[in-house]
Length: 138
Image 1: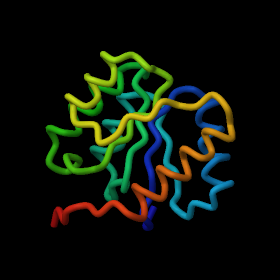
Image 2: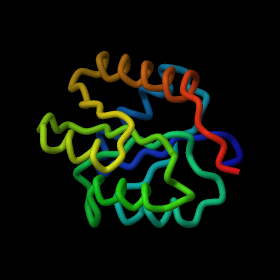
Image 3: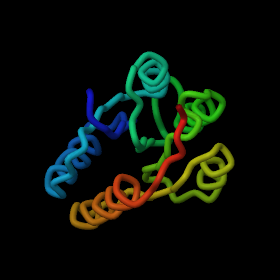
């Protein structure tokens, strides 16, 4: 991918499809790369030449959970500053604390209703892809 893209780290096929449909409906120009477990996320981030502009990270993943992925990212100079939005079904306070303690930039609970999910992805896209400014890592 030569243009800015979003990395979705999600193992649930229904949530992947819902995210893809929502991005299409929102006419988001950024491409969506998908990995389905924590180990694959680290492998992807370790080997790709172009890093995503934002990562949507589920917490409950096979192999390595979202917190473990996030901790690895924050210790790695190449991925340290990539914005990470935890996008999960969990509303547990301990998950929120663990996410922010590990360096998450945002914590968003997945709405069950498609229309609410559509609105959430639209707002996330506008903020993280249009308004947010990242530091130069060159």
